[in-house]
Length: 86
View (tube, rainbow, N blue to C red):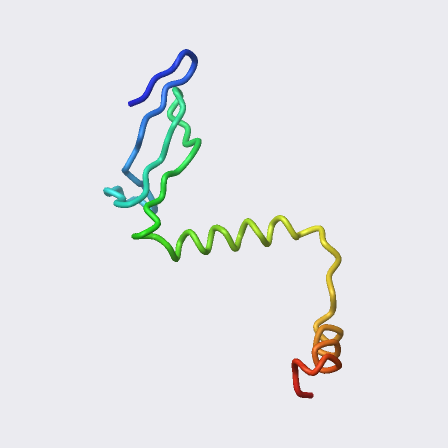
């Protein structure tokens, strides 16, 4: 456990999901003084696919307010540029 002037950080390696509790290897949760999870430390060698999923989710959320382009318009542009055969 790490402590500072106003913060206490506890590393929690346990998970509880759907009535099951167990040791989660390669992922650690950092909690505040009240036990609320505030951050996660992920072993990227063990969980690279999980990290890629998280990164993809963050990118998609950051783009959720962008103007959408209909699929047919995208296809037409790719055909016109020679990158797709129609």
